[in-house]
Length: 182
Image (cartoon, rainbow, N blue to C red):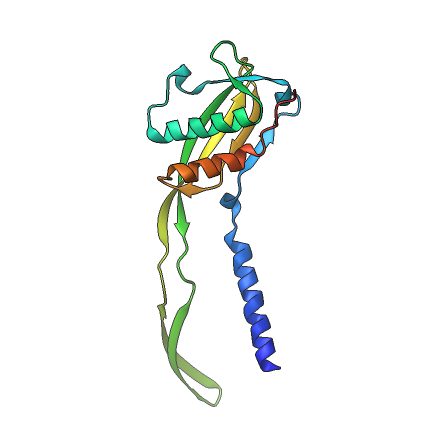
């Protein structure tokens, strides 16, 4: 009976901890302007840096991933009067990676009558809190008259993600971009 109770306690503690692990940054987010029919558009172009090509490896990886997702959804890239413009921007942020919340303590105490006293100390066990650089990618689709039609933000990634991570993150947020209506 006691063993079953211990297992149930440990299981509920693990479920609670795993529930907390998926914070705000663990999922992509997006929003579409209800008054703009993005699915009715057929062509897209790029608005970042006034039409200049990407200048960093990461910009190029992001652009290629966004392009692949839009083409898969039925849109065609066009530099000649596209229906909507795509802008992407890496957004870096510092977050605190929490270390181990476990502490081990030692104490001694005494009590005599209604008076008592004690002395104790404790030591952290495991990793300390550390500041970690992370990033997201913000993607915007705007109409040629600069009205925002759609905006999405990827899940949090490492500061210097590899190409596969970028592709996965972009694919995750682009799930919220509407398929082109034929």
